[in-house]
Image (cartoon, rainbow, N blue to C red; front, side):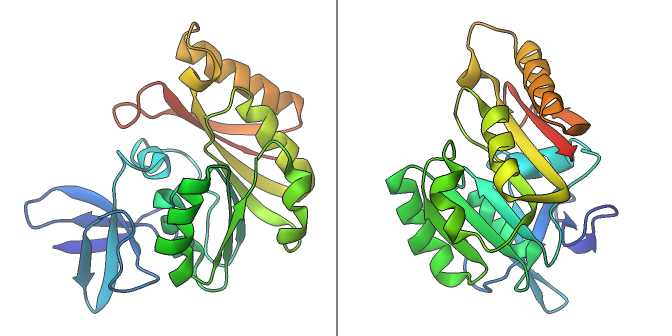
Length: 229
């Protein structure tokens, strides 16, 4: 087995397993604990969590050669649609102890799992039980402005909801990542048409699009949009 840093993105690692297969990983902020049954591996005294691109759209985007990942050590991230914490836990690994991840999730069952299985062991994560459509309701829980917003929600107006949150919480020259779920927006339209429409919404709200990556074969009818203000 061999592990080396990703050539572009800090705190993301490329793993070559004994059978020669290639995987992504992050350094485990909570050694000995897995979040969603992912494999833990040790290399040169450090424990890594293998990162499943079929379970995480962010990992899928990295493997599809997305141009930018604006999630880095020591920054604050607002995560909309954190669910039970699969991807959010890897974001927590990346930002590290000096960074922070604010996790907004509307489903009470999902946030229970997020709290009990993830946030209870990670001091750099704050779970917030709220609807991402109403950022004013959780503004008091977020300290200052965030450098990045990551959005993965099953709502019809995904780009608008992200932009509304950016108005509240994103620093100037901040970044966003939007995982577009085409079928959550309009099942009658071609996914590529949906992606273009969401891009236009973001551009109209002042964002500069840096990249749009289709996530097949890891996620059908999904794309990752990366943009900055």
